Image (cartoon, rainbow, N blue to C red):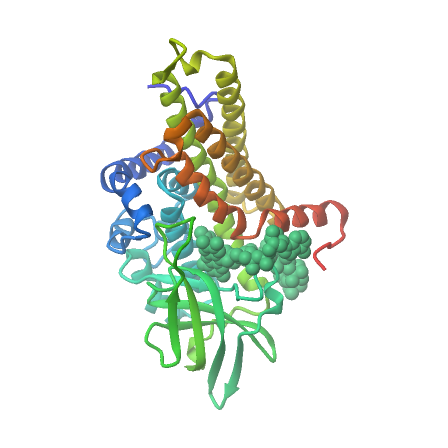
Amino acid sequence: MKDPLDLLDTSSLLSEEERDIQATVARFLADRVRPHLPEWFENAHFPRELAPELGKLGLLGMHLEGYGCAGVGAVAYGMACLELEAADSGLRSFVSVQGSLAMYSIWRYGSPEQKQQWLPKLAAGEAIGCFGLTEPDFGSNPAGMRTRAVRDGGDWILDGTKMWITNGGLADVATVWAGTDEGVRGFLVPRGTPGFTTHDIERKLSLRASVTSELILQGVRLPESARLPEARGLGAPLSCLNEARFGIMFGAVGAARDCLQTALAYADARIQFDRPISAFQLTQRKLADMAVSLNTAMLLAVHLGRLKERGRIRPEQISVGKLNNVREAIAIARECRTILGANGVSLEYSPLRHANNLESVLTYEGTSEIHTLVIGQALTGQSAYR
Ligand code: TGC
Ligand code: FAD
């Protein structure tokens, strides 16, 4: 059946394989996840047992080649993110952090032994990874990080704190970025390493169905074999962010689509002044404006996905996608909430849950201000961060 929200037939831009992947993910979520989302959100619960199921579906590190990863194209990966975030941003975040940050950092910068040790388990969801870049005093400006790694004979000693780390409290292995005398370096810190503890952040109003933690490193001794040998400088963690930001650009479209589907159905069923509220011009204006934004966000995502598949995407183009699509998605989620009236503030309906989640998405992986400045720098040649 034709989807009325796909005004521009954007689905015709997808291959059969991409549509199949999208449909498989959507079916899994409908059966296994959607019925539980309000409860998970309310109880601030991420079901760890989902990890092997996501692994079995091939969703963990799905755009990476080898080591049990599915090796699909960028748009197929994006469509999986879209469906995951149509359910809940917390779920997409789990998959993004596992595949695009934790696994990608090892896949791109790890030694053959590190790849063999971690990637197959992470791809299967038998192990969970996290990625620690942000610190309490350094979020948008990771160059200032205080976490230090100092050589001690053949070993390294790490000290510092990472903050707001998705999957931190669940992770079997953390990719931790630290300053050294030679610049920023990455380290793999297994759970249980003496001196390494995590502390989950509570009372979040956003991304509640996701674990977010503080990582504390106090005199953590690691062998040289725990260092990611190919990662040199801040460019290494920033290159991992490109991967995750790419998935978010598609994910945000999914959250927006779910809100708009909910609002459209509600507007059709809800009668006021003896008419469905969908028959009022003011409601139709909201719906039409949102459908235009949704479709243009989707076009942008697919276009950038095709550039990525050709190996031609640039960081500032990913910033355009992340900035636009998250900004549009949060505006859509809030507007849909208004169409639901009082029911819009209930967890029985998804728009306000999505809007609250998107507050985090607007901030993490580079705030909207940082992406604006990335684009500004690409336009003018001038860096305005400092
Ligand atoms: P700058 O001097 O511009 O760059 C330092 C080096 O990095 C290179 N570089 C990049 N390389 C690859 N991809 C990119 N996007 C890159 N951006 C910069 C650059 O060429 C340079 O290389 P080299 O060889 O010359 O040393 O760095 P800066 O200190 O001026 O900062 C630039 C800025 C502000 C854009 C950057 O710091 C930034 O992106 N800040 C935002 C931080 C951020 O996004 N943190 C996210 C943490 S992870 C997370 O939020 C996970 S959320 C959970 C989920 O994903 O679901
Ligand atoms: P700040 O950098 O302090 O920014 C505060 C405000 O100042 C923002 O509006 C910002 O745009 C603005 N600002 C900062 N600098 C400038 C400037 N130069 N010009 C104009 N405005 C500026 N991090 C990880 O490393 N790993 C994770 O897995 C992870 N998961 C997260 C999960 C959640 C739920 C959240 C909320 C965050 C997560 N983060 C993670 C952290 C996230 O990346 C940071 O929150 C983000 O980079 C912003 O940093 P900050 O919160 O310290 O804000």
